[in-house]
Image 1 (cartoon, rainbow, N blue to C red):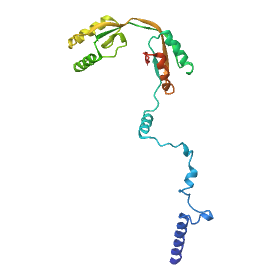
Image 2 (tube, helix red, strand yellow; image 1 turned 120 degrees about the vertical axis):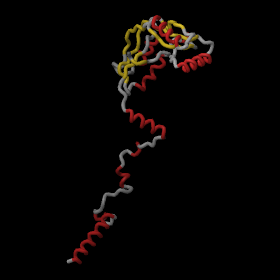
Image 3 (cartoon, one colour; image 1 turned 180 degrees about the vertical axis):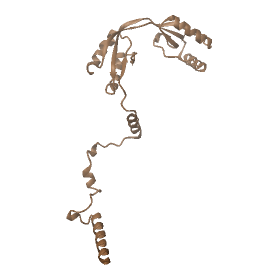
Image 4 (cartoon, rainbow, N blue to C red; image 1 turned 135 degrees about the vertical axis):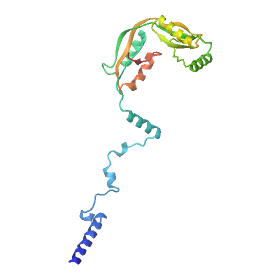
Length: 218
């Protein structure tokens, strides 16, 4: 009896070995093949696989981690009629409802101003001095005041004068209050929901807007 059991085990082991090594494939017996050419036959559109350079791979991984950005509302400042005409022509191919033109009144703006300097090098030295004092500054929107510095913008002259006095207490002696722009009435471009489909097309608006820039809606 014991001999019979040993014989059966030997036959079973031998049969499994022959099956696992594919010796029985001519008779339709054997494991699923995991080697070529069977794997090649199982590929789906192998021509679409592309190896990315390291920089592109990092960029794709960053975008994937961020996920889709929510839509944002963007608007332009008051525009001239020539700009509006050019914008309307450019936006004809945009989806319906993705843009509109609306009337706008932009109030006068007063700034605490330092300048006008003789050259950009002197303006750069003034910026360095302000950084040492811990005083912030911002870009000017009126090119006629360049080269110069804005230490803050305000809706009226009184608020600007108050801020200038605060800066004087901190060591600023050469600033003065000027009106950067008068009240402006006109029309502006409104993009109520710029999503990931429209964001790449914002570059189309750069030329019609000229020096004007889009900013988040208030």
